[in-house]
Image (spheres, rainbow, N blue to C red):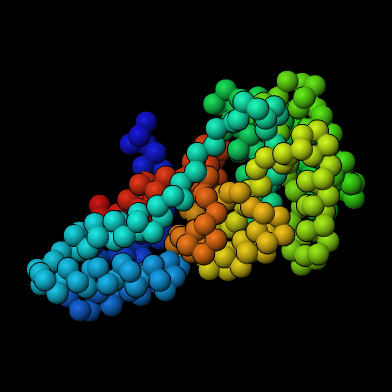
Length: 305
């Protein structure tokens, strides 16, 4: 099982890891000044950011200065150690709290981030772990959102409180938590709208959802997780800032990492905002939503096989 999870991460971050191969097979040969420059280019291309890139390069250059026979595989091990150090504390594990029944999770993010799909995959993951879940279709702004989440609910046999285009999203959220209580659900997941181009309206809607579900439980929503598209690279940091300032994020889910060579973006969000990372989307299948693992992540990025 452990081996298969590592392979999922390697498959998911294949495009990022291929950057290092595309620039001369950096990890497959002895280092020289040219290959260190190639490595720098790859790290910037993968959106690790200036600080993290320089930390990795400084330690590799220091090792190379002491040993001119340093091999790319050894440089990769240095990269793993530095990246793991940068990400220390970022790995978050979701465990339902016994005092919160139901435990309410609000998923937020812009349209196109994969929020609706992620909400269904997350519900499926929780149910596979033995927790009864209900979904709330609180994205009542996007016309196709209700149909999309209903299709996923049917496919994965999930309980759903539907919404409709133009309905009050907060009312759907309230009904979802109420249904969770009456139907004995352990977790309620609220899929919210994401129209960032009308930012003030969206943030007011999110605040209203929070006020309304707090009528069931003053601490709800217990989790406010941002779903961010990993293909956006460093732009995802700006999104995270906006939502964090307005909504007080407690966690992060990074999607579409299998479709991008910019798999370093989550490092920037952690480094700047210290928002813990709960899950990553490593493919299109429901089981490709996986708990984030620093060890698996750094091994996948600096894959020398």
